[in-house]
Amino acid sequence: MSQGADIRILMTTDTVGGVWTYSCALASRLAAAGAEVILATMGPPARPDQREMLGDSQVHLVETDLALEWQDPEGRDLPKARRVLSGLEARFKPDIVHLNSFREATLPWRAPTVVVAHSCVNSWALACRDTAWLGEPRWAGYTERVAAALNRTQAWVCPSRSFHDDIVEIYGPRSPGAVIWNGIAAGNSPSRKRELIFAAGRLWDRAKNIEVLSAAAPGLDWTVQVAGPANADPSTGVTWLGQLPHDALRGHLEHAAIFVSPALYEPFGLSVLEAAAAGCALVLSDIPTFRELWSGAALFFDPHDGQALHQILTGLCADESGRARLQRAAYEHSLTYSLARTTSAYLKLYEGLLAPDRTTSQAGRIEVRA
Image (cartoon, rainbow, N blue to C red; front, side, top):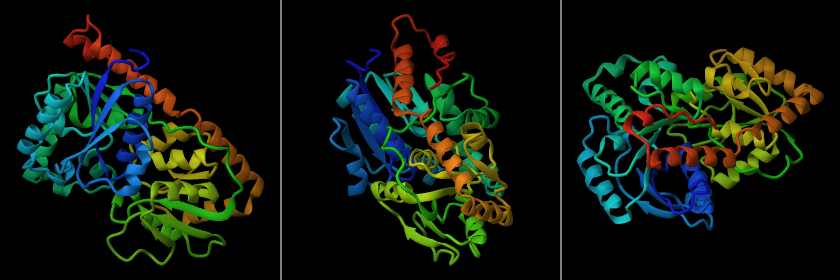
């Protein structure tokens, strides 16, 4: 069991944002460890470049057209989700159901369930200082379902201690949950860098706070590039690359000397980890998650202060030796967040849930750290 042999896992995912990257990496590594993994998508179907992220792994991909829970706060799609997902459980008979959103944990699963909290609307709104609309009845229903999911599941997980504490404060779950850091597979040694500042984020997502980078960009000697989807004309302060396939994104990271994340809200930040693994110097917003994960390996700035960000970037562009030290520190620290370590932690969690002598009360005390 510790190597994943003879275990069948039904894992849900979605194709919007970092959850897909996380799910593909973890599912592929679990399959390589001997587990049988069924990966069921929510929301839009996977693009061809997203499918390629599964490579030649033995993961079985099943696509549904179920709504994403944050796009369906009233829960109108819940009856359909119950029918579709109960059908998948009956078809595949999983030993473990690994859920990457909350809503599905309220369904009557036969197998033990694990919920991974990658984000939530309430914590997003608090970080973005945009809470007025949360009083609407539709979001009250969403909040009730998240709280119910955390209490109904056999185990719940967060990718950082900071976000775990947010979930506890907002929803007050009965069980303590677990913290398992996200991880990525080790790549090649960092390549030669160019005079390039790079960022990645959705322009339409206020939490990504790309506007402050646009405000800081004018007057810098280096080009500032941003990758990610946009629903409107992007700022002229940066070179906007649009949405890139994952391989292309990693290619840009290999060449960028500096990576900036001005996020107001980030439960983990896989793009930051990928940038560090590519040997970029990290310039990050001063938020609890980034302090927890990257202290000593990044420079931090007030995410509401574009002038402060401009000054940091100006100094870093001019300081070759300081930049090299920061690049080395980021790369070395990225090795802490290995995919092997993450996978081992999840297998340990599954093993605890499947132990013959496990009781319901014991499940609430599971504490696993990557």
